[in-house]
Amino acid sequence: MEPIFTDEYFMKKALLEAENAFEKGEIPVGAIIVVENRVIARSHNLTEMLNDVTAHAEMQAITAAANFIGGKYLKGCTLYVTLEPCQMCAGALYWSQISKIVFGARDEQRGFMTLGTQLHPKTEVISGVMAEQCAQLMKDFFKKRR
Image (cartoon, rainbow, N blue to C red; front, top):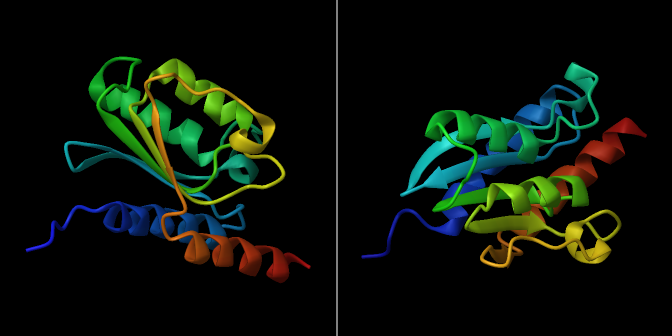
């Protein structure tokens, strides 16, 4: 029997968050943070609603997870995010010492990999999980805005 709690299972939950952002007119990026197969934080971009350039999905998720845990370090946690984190979010993820980051679509212009931003040396990164679905949501969003 295959395990139910796969990277795809959790990325689908992050995609639901991205769809919530899309419906609100926010750039459709969704994120969840999981510990021991339990979702402890879920978020999506809120930069327009909050008029705050730092209100990325990952930043919101880091804050929610830290509040849930009662501490600033996210060791043992996994972030699932629909788009490769930017360097601001990668910096925050570095300081949080998150154990694992799983993202969907690459951000070829602003992503941390493109810009060479370092993550914590113990952070594992998995890319390309449901990349096509994640990228399509972004394409649909920007097509609608034009």
